[in-house]
Length: 543
Ligand code: G16
Image 1 (cartoon, protein in one colour):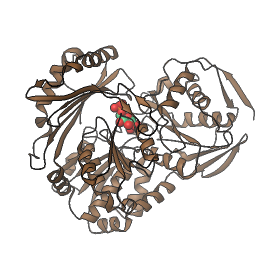
Image 2 (cartoon, helix red, strand yellow):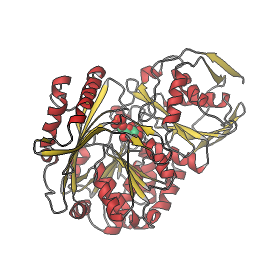
Image 3 (tube, helix red, strand yellow):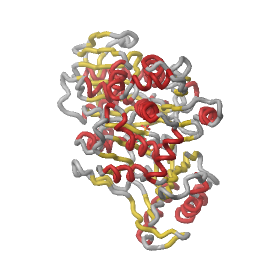
């Protein structure tokens, strides 16, 4: 077995986005595409000789090919050990836990999250640092710079490594240890939550459906919900990971989980429905007759976290991404704890969590998590909900209504325009930016503009600044319009419009969401001219 140094030429399109490098599988299949990117990551790091690297993926198409390449390149670059999930599987939160638990130098997470899989679908690679979280911009910028000039990569001429059985093997000077992907994660969940109370809840006849969407959380959900917590067999559906997600779209929202939503709206349906995405970091929460928006879920989990043993001492603070509704802010205010607003991307929570300034974080894009790992965590959110339901002995609907009656309700929706021509989308946002200075003080359709800017984040921990993170127009009554371009799409641009309206504790809490936000929808159109400029008559997805 010898280390080989292979000549290569750079690709111009390896700029990491919101969450690593996401591209079509066909792009990743180009010669040396994976090799260049992984070598560029290692070239941007220092001090890993002899250290441990964690590698795992969501099992999507090309996972098995890329993982073999990654192991060979890691060995040739001098890592001492690779920890890899059996079958190449690790959910993103489980990978984060493994990195932290075994004090690894970092990890490679192979996933394109909620994007479709299969030969025509998407693939992705993300580097996580030793705290278990996505690499900060300082590193991703260095990686991108390196991809532009890379001319060689190192690998090992070794046959494929057997990832099917648990145990250790050696390749060159490096040890490869294949681990049970579920075990450490399940142990962590058992420490955080009152499994006894949740077991009793299921024993009392409480019924739930968990849709693993043919993705990575299947084995975790089977083991924890049906195994450790005693939920009846059949509670977990679509629980066997498939490389193409059974030709589905593993995005847990009301479009792709419509069947579950309909089931939860019927009188004979289960009490609780939940789902997670391709790599297991997102969540969908639906109670009987009550869908909980991710923004509300963040606020509710933060307000009730103390009911779970892992958070019984209370929480230090809350962070949310800028486009996420301000529902959590009201909880933080009442609890008298820190509240932070960060740009979109889980990586921005890392410093706040490491510094102990926040305990719970969340995003409108169906991500919630805490300081137990440094990724958002789909099953964690489901288990915290179950813990709260078990203790409060109320329905989801009752808990949500009580919350609104205490804090008020933030009506919230996101309208996505997918696969828009990039030049048109960029020009639209640029023009909107150009109009912002004149807006404060103006009254638009009866709403007075309080502020209008392009969000700039100043990290309070390391002092770094991230500019141009999304256009926001805030109104005196707490309403808000946010427009930004997604950093996770793989074809053209995805334009996201986030709309929010606040109704106080004694206000109207029973309006239909789109109707409640209709004036803001109209106002956005008059400000940004989305329909006229993109030629779209309506959004591709409304959540
Ligand atoms: C990633 C990031 C999230 C972000 C989401 C959507 O999630 O980790 O922080 O909110 O993308 O980002 P965008 O609006 O730029 O598409 P995931 O689940 O795709 O890894």
